[in-house]
Amino acid sequence: MNFQVTGLGLDKMKLDSPQSFLDQEEAEEAEDQQLLEPEAWRAYMERRTALREFLTSDLSPHLLKRHHARMELLKKCSYYIEILPKHLALGDQNPLVLPNTMFQLIDPWKFQRMKKVGTAQTKIQLLLLGDLLEQLDRGRAELDALLESPDPRPFLAGWGLVAQRLADLSAVMDSFLAMMVPGRLHLKHRLVSDIGTTKIPHIRLMLSTKMPVMFDRKGSVAHQDWASLRWFVTIQPAAPEQFELRFKLLDPRTQQECMQCGIIPVAACTFDVHNLLPNRSYRFTIKRAESYTLVYEPWWDSLTLQTRPGPPEGPTPSRLGKPGLPLTTLSVR
Image (cartoon, rainbow, N blue to C red; front, top):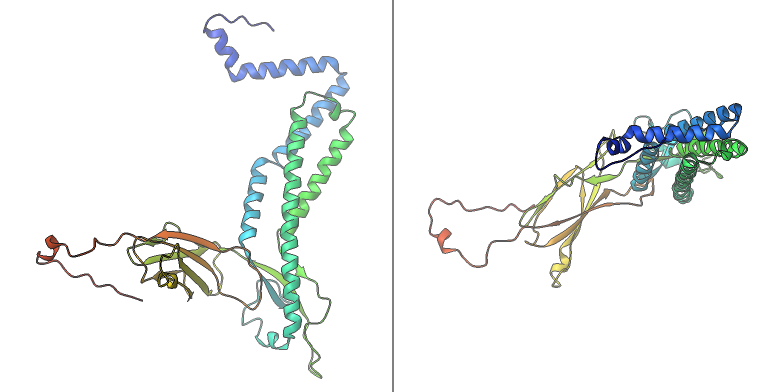
C-alpha cells in the first residue's frame, strides 16, 4: 500500500489517525499469513489470542497493581496468635466464646516459644509473598514481550514451552492468593502442661491479622501550644482497642526541651496533646497497645506537625488599651 503525502493535507491526517495504524497492523498480519500455511496460521492466531486473554484477565496490570497494594498493606499490619478450641472458627475469639481460663491452662514458657515460631512464620510468609509477586511481574513482562514480537516460532514450534509458562504462572498466582491469608501454627509440643485428672482441652493456634492504625492527616492539626491528633483503623474491630500515642520534640535546643516527649495510653481514636512549644516541629507515632498475643508488628504510623508561632514577645499597647476584649483562658490536660 503506497501513500503520497503532500504538505499538511488530508493524506497525512489519515496516516496519523488510529485507523491507519490498524490498517498497518492488518497489513503486517497479511504478510505473515502469506508466509505460513493456512493451518499453521490458524494455530498461530488462536495461540496469540489465548496469550492475550491470559494477560488481560489472569495477569492483567490492574490485577497486579491491586496485589501490590495488598502486599504493602500486609507489611503494615499487626499479627497475633489466636488460641481457639478446635470446634470454633477464626473470628469467634471473644471473651464469651473463649474464656480466660484457656490462657490459665497454657504453659507460659511454651506459649512464649510459640510466639517466636509465629514471628518467624509471619516473616517467612511475607518474604514468600514478595517473591511470588516478583515472579508474577517478571512473567507478565516476558509474556508481554512475546506477544509484541513478530516472530511466529514461539507460537508454533515452541508453544509447549509457552503453555508450560502459563501453567506455572497460574500456579504461582494460586499460591500467592492462598498465602495472603494467615494460616495455622503447627504445634510440635503440647501447650498445656500435665494437669492431673483435669481433662486437657483440644486447642489450635492460628495467626490472625489486624489492619494498621493510621493517622487521619486531614483531621490532625497543630495549634500554637497543642495538637489535636486523630487516627483510624480501616476495618473497625468488634471490641474497643487500646492505643499508644508517642510524641517527641524534634531538634531540642536545651536540656529542658529534651523532656518534651512522652508515651500516652489512649482508649479512643482521638487525643489532644497540650503544653507544646510554639513554632516547633513534633513527631507523633501511633500504635496498638502491647498485647500478650502479639507476634509481629513491623510498622507504626508517624506524623510530623509544626505548631504555630506564638505572639510577639512583650505587650502590645494597641491591644492592652482596648476595652471589651476577653482574656484567653488556656486549658491544660
